Length: 560
Image 1 (cartoon, rainbow, N blue to C red):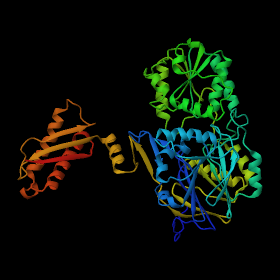
Image 2: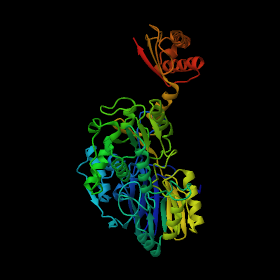
Image 3: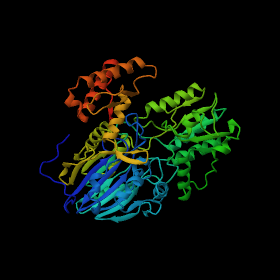
Image 4: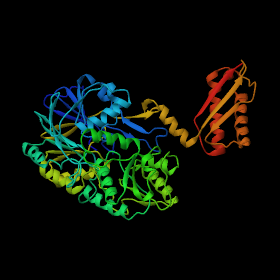
């Protein structure tokens, strides 16, 4: 990794002769995209998304990028421009917008989805400036043109940021879909035109940079679903991303072709359905049933489109498997189709859900058995095509883990791009015709939605919670007189290490605390902190000897 140039200082005011690119999320990881562009003393943001918690973040479902660097420059922030409506690109806006209260820009479908999310957080009055597809808008010193692309959600856009220094093409998420079913194909003429005009830097999607060939067509998935559903004689469940409106169309088409009705099962599916209806993307589509309506149909006459393709514990499919759904149940002989990709990190929970279905006698079909899903991101052939059209001076891969970014940068060099730079969250990259320059590094941490609070993911509370998950926790209460002599046996509570009937082990811990208190010199027993620390160490050492663990230990001292 290139070291930042010494002597360059970020003051919050990028110069008139430079464009700065600063990713605070989405570089070195898939998800949580937050990208800053600075020019002429001002800043704009491209996307503000979330990622999801895993086994390393107990109790946390949603993780946000920490925008501390941007908060310090809120007076110089001219707006947040959103490329499309996926959670990893807009999901953090409802949680972080009040820290900036700046202008929001989005196309109609993205705005419709975002308004519903803002309303859910009590921000229904926040104004969103809608930009038409292929429209233009001025945000601070940036003249921005939207270029229509294709993706697994309606209205994905690349952003052309025009400045006197040069044009920046921020691709967002994209692919080259020959038969998108929803919306137009990618605007290759606009891409060629901006390439002819000159592109200083392309900042682009790297998700599939290791995958050969082309990402495939939604039309092919629709035909496969017709074949699969047509061969089923019982109830069929299809699990997919709720935002994939084209997949919603495909499932509805497959149901209709096989003599079935289709129902939407899951709140997020209905929210996306309503946003798509509002913006005209489901005009002419068959009516979708509710789960309650579907429950009354014969099992061979219904297809259930469900949330839960990633194994989410509160999703519709997970509730159905737990027999916790009020209307829907599955039986042996039913079929579950996972029409989605596995997001890295979700392998275990998805596998557990699929195993539970198999145990019930439900046939499980995934993309490993049949081509029931196509990615919304460009494979290598599509990346090559983009570089042939755009011909940038600089390529900066984003939206990927390090291996994806490195592979994307190598592909760009193979496409004769003169300069590449693999970024990381917090990198400050200066973009010039002489190439990219890593000039500084700023803080780029993570925040967690913990219940009804936003807390630092790297903070003490979350660190202690993770530690407790591995080692358990102990609490000891000791009551002493003014001279520090015990007036009763210490009370020990050990969580996550000892069972209720491990009385002998608890007694050993109590005895250890008694010994260490008795052995302290009288003067030390009169000092609260000395007494508490001696008791804490005695508990940890004894539990380590008994269990091989050193749990966080809290001591309550009472003088009577």
